Length: 238
Ligand code: APR
Image 1 (spheres, rainbow, N blue to C red):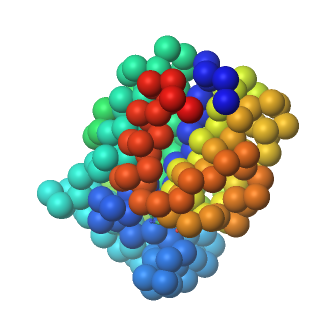
Image 2: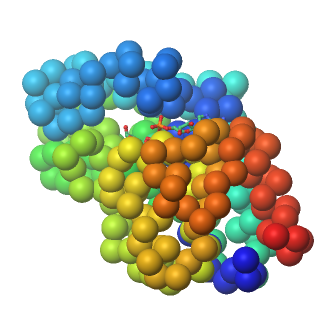
């Protein structure tokens, strides 16, 4: 592989697994204990907002748990961003704050963030680390009953898609870390990058659904294979 200039990195729940945050589709994953329809769709929120608030309040509070810290994979991506001569963009499907807490700056949360909420009445969004509910009044318009997690639910449009598309068309290395390749449009990013001439690499515990679309796939724990890959890239030994 020629030494890359612009790198785009897609991360999924697998990069946060070793920090103690559940993934979605593992046997003990979030979607085995909750029905997506009920807690991760606009229809579910309209039908039972209290249940949806309870689901996201618990996940938001978990981020305050001292045991939940960025792991070596998050930190390796910070090292790459700081030491690589070209551009490094992280596009994360994750809604946790571990990339930020590790020190990543060039970061896009395409599925939203647990630490943000927004008002369905006035559209204002802002940081919030507290529990919210139907009683929560908007800091901007003052109305209650309209606050929702700033999370992209199924059937909603992911965020920053224009920026992400431009980055994919201008990168020469695309790396996917800790994602099962089940959810579009993220699962299609590898093809956009590859069709545009980028080298594509998957770093995952085991081969994902679209593993065959990557030029290379390295399997193992993110906390081990991501730092090792970053070291080999920065030392020009790949
Ligand atoms: N190291 C590396 N990879 C891991 C680790 C680990 N320690 N643990 C799990 N994985 C891998 C699994 O093998 C799996 O392929 O991480 C992937 C997690 O897959 P999912 O649980 O499907 O999570 P993700 O791909 O991020 O889901 C994408 O789906 O439900 C929506 O919005 C939600 O953002 C989420 C999206």
